[in-house]
Image 1 (cartoon, rainbow, N blue to C red):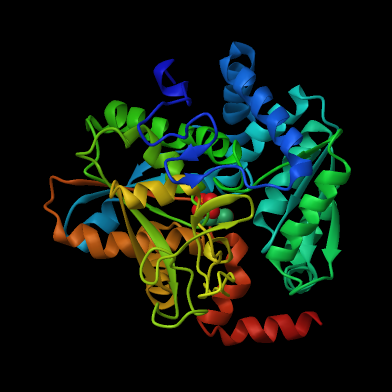
Image 2 (cartoon, rainbow, N blue to C red):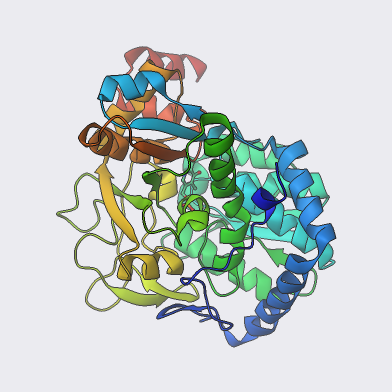
Length: 420
Ligand SMILES: *Cc1c(COP(=O)(O)O)cnc(C)c1O
């Protein structure tokens, strides 16, 4: 990798101001008692950013622990099948632990070490963020506690098992709805109590300042690699389209960031359309209809909420996109029209999943299959000399239970029964 392609700290017109406001989004709406901790984090991060040692250590981790750069692969079969633009897959599924989440987890763990912290905490819903956190905690020798709503804890036994094998303590949260939201509250409370020695590791480009900018920076390596790989391997100056799925927004902002300035590159974010976007509670598409702003979990952005501002239930076949909010920079990019936000339904996602597996021998995570579903709609409308890059945020191994069920695999049920 050249020097140029490792500079993850890019300034764009969409970036936050010094108070963490992305124009009218973002900010730091945290409990009074956490403000000093967030200020300490901000100061430590802005120092680390400028430190050559920190940059070098991070690149070393990316390369030699994580396995970066991940391939940018020309999907010839899928391209021929769809008879349109050339499709390139940025395969983040080949990261250590199988998804892009390791990128920002490594960056934050390295920072926590610099800050002299001894312990890392995180919340997790489906368990993917908990798993990435437990992984880096083991690698860096931190104590690690992961909070999980009891409902999720019971449903996600495989991930709980792995987190425990990695040495993390997985703590069940019994209040409220016993889901992700309550796990977030419990994690915040823990942080308030143990702020001196504890680092709160966030799982997406959201939360109070400086998390959204910091997580974006750590994911920007993805877009930088795409730039370099397109040029060096394929002799393509720039893509015409970049497509990525959007939960909280970290994988999307990471691949978009180096291209935000160049308006000739069209950027598409894909939200979870679930069972369709007609009814509240059946999807997680925040930027399609009834678009509402709010302040939740420390930041201002768009959230699925009722007329009282209560956050609504969401549904998606993919756990990683099943979230009512969206990172603040995406809020701004939506408002400015720089990124177009579309959605894919569960059904379209299953079709996309099957097509990618059969044409390219790549099993995508269900989140990433949302981006593939959009590729299926967009690529055929474009001429053969156009280039589409899709961010395949993760691989699908983790989704075996959901997929076998959704695809009605009878033998799978028998298999599960035989194990009991
Ligand atoms: C968590 C996750 C996502 C969604 O998170 P973002 O912050 O929106 O990227 C997408 N894909 C995979 C594979 C995930 O694990």
